[in-house]
Image (cartoon, rainbow over all chains, first blue to last red; front, top):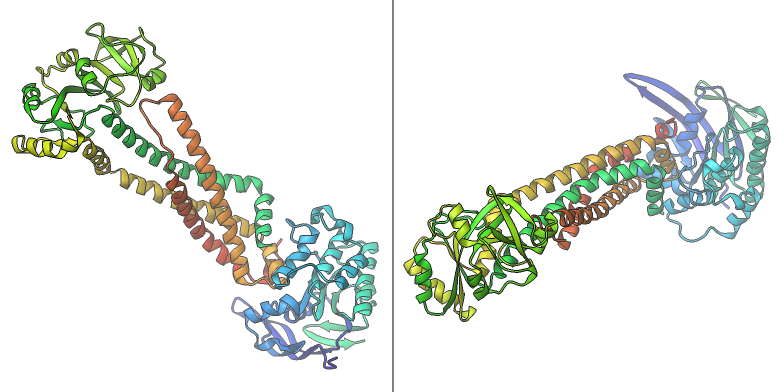
Length: 227
Length: 365
């Protein structure tokens, strides 16, 4: 087992160009995340947590600084390189579930494997996770026939089907009622405990953050507190 | 999986997909009908010329175009001259008169027709009076006529004395003398057919005729078919087909471009999702392109079906005036043309989708 942090971030800056004006979203973030850790990132709107999420997920490049993800230095990756990274190294869970509406739950999961270039059926470990998620009998339904909680569980299944090094969850309970929120958070916690899945979760909700082992507080593009 | 994505996308907006396919299908159907019509008309003219039983055709000097309904300029003395030539066993002078678009009546002497290729009657028989006519079964079907009925043309009323099998000379035969009088041809003919003792002597006889009849169009029946095609082509048919092909490509391009552009707009978020999963630009472009090809292929198939329907309608309503053939090679050609148009049309929306920023796409409502 490699003991090096799975995420190593040093002096990370991101400046968005809005017209001719540069708007700083991150102003020197340093963060290390150990393999198998469950971290919550909390902060008000505009604190830079979503930007950090997008950079770690390889959706946008940093403006300055260093970010190494499971041995891949993202600051030197091209767009194509970051696309490649998203196939297997990171998995996303979004607030709005973001399932493909035309495909069944099963195909939503299968499409992630297809894009990653993995053929054949998911392995036994994943089948066990599906049982834990409790969606086996809902796999042949399209998203519009699933409840919010079911959709989010399908999204989690899709995010981890390729066994990514890091699971990134952006407000995963933001669109769910209390019962479903609890269920999803317990699933994430269970996933972390049972499989050692590294999870980085953005949330506004202190109760949700409580499921994580560590919480990072952000404000104005900086980490202001670690608890 | 890519195919599944494409099919599910097409199914997701069935009306948009159907309308796109329909609009692509219309020029395909038009193209196939036009090509089928031109091929059918040419083959029918060729078939009927061969059905005359003649080996050589001589036309008047001023009748350059093979399909023209020219005035009668060939003197009846030519009949006597042709009869003296070696290998010529029968002659037939014919006067043609156009009575409607693409339809002529031929003035013939039935005794001469029988010497070349006897008429096979389906009903009735030969001329009983000066204003009797024979019509073929296709024209009878088109006009819903039977023996004993009358028809009006050339300001005269004509009685149908017989209906014959199609594929011989023309759709309407009238007594030669009557037509010559009505056209005031002074006994002259529009064209003269020669039947030889052996078709192998055709070239020999033509060479002999060309020595004495300089400037007269003298063709073997084989050559006539080629000249019909050349004549039709001279009238711009190929250019017209080219224009229809161009319209097909432009419509295929335009429809697919608009349709896929709308689809890309509607699916901005889905494109973001695919990108978040690691979908490359090439993958996104491939999905859009395959969907465009799907629409193009659907348009081609529907166009083929529509052209078959158009052919059925034409052959039911105007079997004598228009002959439409199914030209299978053009099914493939029209498919290639449509898919080329669709591929071009998919390019801009595809590249636009591929270049979407993943974060913006995911935030799209």
